[in-house]
Figure (cartoon, rainbow, N blue to C red):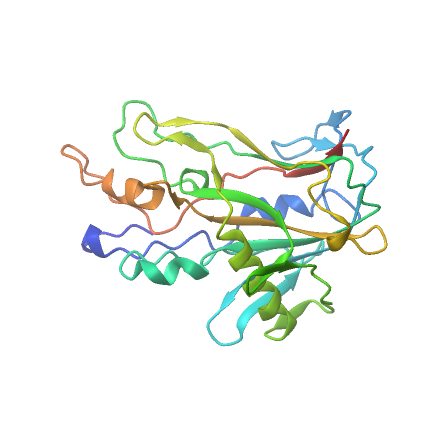
Length: 276
């Protein structure tokens, strides 16, 4: 939906209401479409291949956790019939509220080997700009970054996530505790964006985020099981605000288009792998 008739300074940018990124995560596997140590692929009806898995790790559960104004946070279990999820809105007016925009995937891994690297690879398909256009395309990959972490921040300490989530939807309770611990832990981690140079529009079609081997110590492992988190958030770091850049690109002389308040998801099939 275009924002015609509204001041561009007062836009409230809202992310896509149904993110293809998560649809693809669960559509090609009996459990979850997390694939590692890629060997081969086959064609499907989608533009993305399905990778076979010879990784040693197994995913026993994946929950999407996000801020909720009523319950503090909600957790939604990803299943083959429940995978339509949304990022929280970006508040362009009161930007201090954006501390609660992150969207987390909480992933429980079994048969975890701490002596191997653990890597998430995330592809995207959208261009930063199209042709000679001055304005930035409203693809999600043009405004977000990813973080990959483990452990929950509790005061000055990072603790093991030993909480239990049961059921398809959890409102408040453990969902809120986990969300706040993940959020506070991720604050100290630099995000990896697809956009590598906002001034020139340079962009990677794939980003890779790794937790190096032996980084996750026994403190965070129980019965060869570890909990890790993949966070998506708007990239506002190191003096760069990709949402600001997106909005401002429509204010340039000669640009008649208006910024859209819905970001189109262009994120593809995400792989999670361990490797020697």
